[in-house]
Image (cartoon, rainbow, N blue to C red):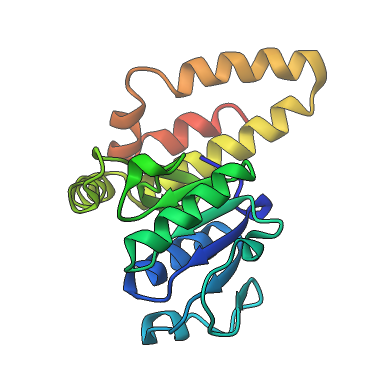
Length: 199
C-alpha cells in the first residue's frame, strides 16, 4: 500500500486494462502519464483530469520513464511489456506487468474503499478471483465501517494532541474500542455510543 499523492506513475498502453489501472491510480491521488500508440475510448473518457497527462500517441522508449516511481506495462504486446519491465527495473522503479506478474516488482490488488477504510485483495495473479473476493468483502465492510474508522481517526487525533496523558488515553481507548467485538459493535450500531464515551 503506497501513498497515492506521492506516486508519479507511467502507464504504457491505451486499452481497457490500461484504463482500469489509470482509474485506480487516479482514485488513489497519484499523478499519471499514459503512453500508447492508440487510446481506447475507456482511456479517453478519463481525460481531462488535472493529474492525468496523455502523451502524444507514440511507441514506447525507455526515456518515457523519466521520473516515474511506478510503471505499469499494460500493452497487448508481450515484447513491449517485457522491455518496459526491464527498463523500469534497471531504474529502480516499482513495475507492474499485466500479462506477466512475475516479471514485475509489484501487483495491483483489487481494492474496496469506504472513506478511510481500504481493503486490498490479491489472488495469486488471478484478477477476476480477487475482484469477486473484494466484492464479497465490500458487502460487509460498508459505510458503517467507514464511519467507525473516521470516528476512530478523529478520536485518535484529539487524544494524541493531549501529550503523554493523551497518548495513554488513546492506548486505553483503542483497547476498549477495537477489541475482539469491534465488528459486532459496528454492525449492531453500538460503536458510535461507545466511541462517544471517550470524547
